[in-house]
Length: 443
Image (cartoon, rainbow, N blue to C red; front, side, top):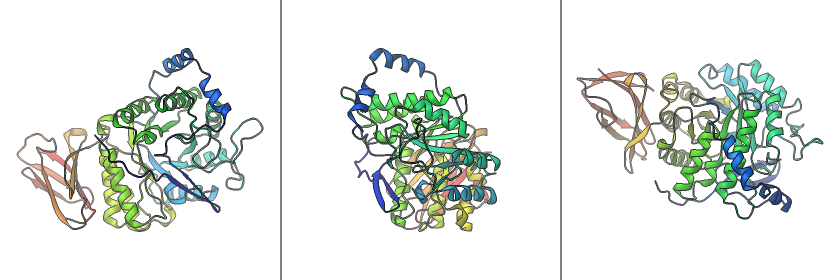
């Protein structure tokens, strides 16, 4: 698969009056923070690196047998987070019933910590934002029956220029374990680049160190790797190689560009959803059960998206067996957004125990057809109208991989309507930007 070069927009940080650019999915590693960092990173001998590689040869524990679900603050709040924002959204997960439907992990993204480490080299929460500390956040989330996720970076600094874990992987992992962390999102900004080492070699080494440090804590911490996102435009061969080792070192990985932010325009949000869908759909062959391609957050609930667009993202992410991680103000969810996020039949497609990512079987400029194997020999079929006017989208039972049968049962997973077919799978008058999602079984 080849990719058209696109602008690397990166993350945009809005914190206080400052704006700093970064990318959890696009910027290549920056230069070293200091000559000392270069020297430290380059000091390891070839024998040491070989030994580290051997220790990491076993796959990271299978802590996510189905795609993770939950909430993350980044796309909506960015750096404007604090204890109240996090816990209010956690309570909203419980109050709306979304937690019972699987949205059970609350992750605090970048900007949660102080700009400097403590006197013992430890990470320190920003006391103005989190006055009770991060262990308190963990206890409160666990008390609600939720899991605690946190963000860090394998570089010298996070994307927002807070302390990274480079050189502190063991200590930081142990601290996270003491805080009761259940999920780590490890970004890849500001990774030093010693002379004589390739970008891919350096990223593999630092993510191996992070993976080993997490496992050594003895606490089961689901590991989200961001490395592939930094190689999306480095050529498919290296991009796919990075995904391959990310699947060994962690449970899920960000493959490319960040999803749009709340303050961006409706058109930008929709374009972002379509772009992330398209690149991630092309990575199906690199996914396997328990190891998940992550095309980034669900935007249902954000301003400017209509019901059809929110439903399309939810349905397409479910077809791709993608993590379902909301990033919005859950306390202000419209009834439509709550219905989209909470549709249990669509969630079941995403969480199907076969754990297989659906594949595109047909597409042109106006539509895309996807098929995803489900247990009991059934198939999920998505008919996506990518155009700006309504249209009919169709395929056949044979084309989506179902066996020959006298008839087929089609269930529309959004409307709940059932019908029979002799083999044609048709969605008439699909709205602009809309997706019809069927579960199909041979009879």
